Image 1: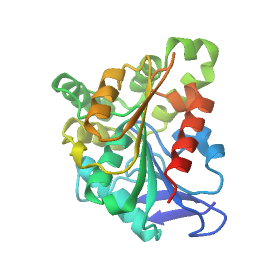
Image 2 (image 1 turned 60 degrees about the vertical axis):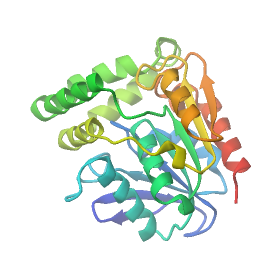
Image 3 (image 1 turned 45 degrees about the vertical axis):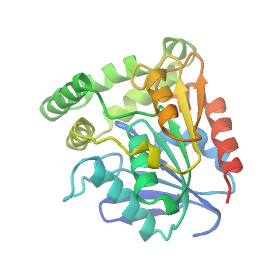
Image 4 (image 1 turned 60 degrees about the horizontal axis):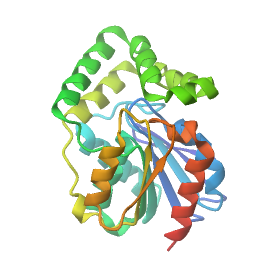
Length: 263
């Protein structure tokens, strides 16, 4: 499992050998890292799995130059080209689902399928204001207060009661973020542009949490209506971190979609 250091971006490359197996690329969300997908790794046997830490998150430093979500998308595309990946299945969570949408529109020939966990649209006006305020808080006060609020609000009550480790994981993921990087990602989301959803040709699976306050079911339903041929699965009693809240169901849905869309 070598780490690929591609400029400021660090990306784990899981595979029996470099270049073996169809590539699956895991793109995390705001406050996440490559570890956000750890519970799904067992379902990806036989695939070459690449999971980057986006610039400014996890182990990757902020990337100078092009800002915003388009810049993050460019960083992922550059990393994949550097790793010799010509075609891949894309898997995203939260903010990462927007990056996957952008890539599916800008380079459709490179995208075998999309699996979007907690899929989002461009944030509405009120959410954009809240994101800018959160960015200011991160820069001024660090991550401690933000981590507690996000962990408490984005994990379902049933998950918090049944498996407190989920909340602990989410809180730790946020606490470990570089405040400047996290703030930059909040700013990126607050200025994000909508993807051209009708232009998405890749087979698309949308996985929504029944009780997700960040990416509500209604948002997933809107995407489902805009992406031709897409499939929507709703996981009961979970919120935004369904990969940890319902790991087996999430893994089963992912593997089934990948196998059904294998080249």
